[in-house]
Amino acid sequence: MNKALNHENLFRLLGKRKATIKTCFQILSSREKEISVLEIGASRSFTSGTINTHEFNPDPEAWDWGAGCFTAVIKILFPQCKLTSLDPNPEAIKVSKIILRSLGAEASFEQTNSTDFLNKTTDKYDLIYMDHAESGGNDSCAVLHRNDAALILNKNLVKPDGLILIDDIQTAFNKGMYSIPFLEEQGLVHLSKNSYQALFRKD
Image (cartoon, rainbow, N blue to C red; front, top):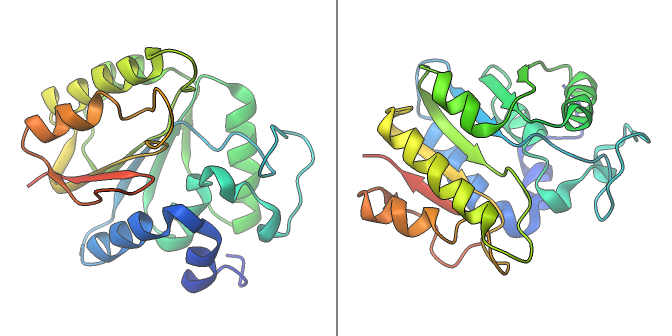
């Protein structure tokens, strides 16, 4: 594990995501058993501010913290967690594998889309991170997140007291536009009002 990336240094790099990630860390740190994490949407670039999938800089300060770099974040906070990361883009999977190799960490990767994976899996997770697809000039990404959130709940894929973390919720046609009110309607506890990410706990 890269010695420069202790918890405090990591939280500093996370910027607007610091509060929600810190809450995840505080909640999950109390678990006695191995933590199981599903990352829907792998890290997609080596460098913040640009789509760079080829020029890897081993200095963690240069990594794509502007997009959250969750693949690295969860393995720094919980090195022993069981991480499953999925993405339909092979380049994104390649980026995440190289970053994890730099940390001396591993994950299980699947090149597939979110809905297909959620339909077939029967595993249960302590944390599901939703950062898939690209929000843009219409609500197609938000619809996808809403439908996938319904699959997660209908298939009971979140463990009791488990967490769902949705990224990029403060942009136009944002990823949580429909999934956030849906999860609230389903009785999940919204832990992160007015944050860049939406964090929910299943009681």
